[in-house]
Length: 342
Image 1 (cartoon, rainbow, N blue to C red):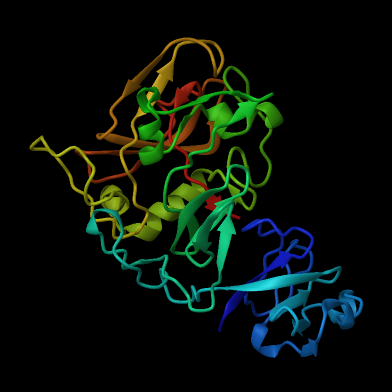
Image 2 (cartoon, helix red, strand yellow; image 1 turned 120 degrees about the horizontal axis):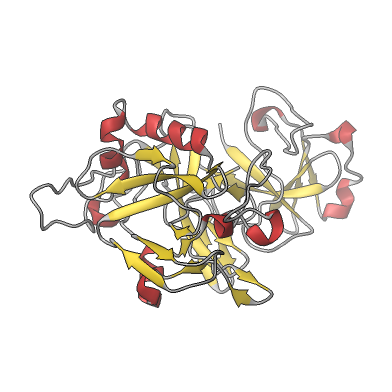
């Protein structure tokens, strides 16, 4: 069965994905998503969309083929949204994908292309919607990967978070742009949680309810500890080997007898972006010191641990495991961000 997503006809920016439609055994109109069974929906064929008539709940899930555009639209109960297709994620762990960075075999994940997925533009950059998505804030294209029941970014976020037009609370490793291109940016926890909007940050707690979008693009969010644990359980039966399944095959320090190489069997493609510590009361103050690029990868969770610490997942070059802990992760420390699809 094909799975498809409806894209709002009022918002034609690439990959905004305002309304999502997934194959399902039933309808759930209260979730904010239009859930339909594509093989069971009635279709109409019209020359222009206006000929399809009014979309209301009586026509919920009906699909209209507009011949002048050669495009399908689906009624979400309020408006006609246009449709594009994603690959079938129905097999356990997703479909087998092509080798990625370091020549890894992503056999338990899926980022493979689909013949049904169109090429769209992110700014001026073409991308395939089956395997990538567009962050319309800065026209950056990110690869995504299906692991178990979750869809993750396959690379670290590289969005320059700003408050009143000024960069705030994130840095390139050693302040080198090439490091941002390779590893993504490093963020304080408050910045990762969109401190300007949520009030989350150093020396204060915040009320987190539901998904925490934080610094992530629309339709994505900063994973909490339960979601990180679900990932670790999906990639390895033994948590002591989860880090090996997450790390890329190359790119990690290999000059030590304790070096523990990755297999990237998950397709997560974790690279060792290191971390940074800025000495100051708040996220944008003080002088930063950067540590362990090539050795460590540390990813924020949205779950905090009091006013000064938050949870994070740590992968190290000389360990096979992936540790989820709040013990050493001060909120003003700069870590990497991986976003999880809503």
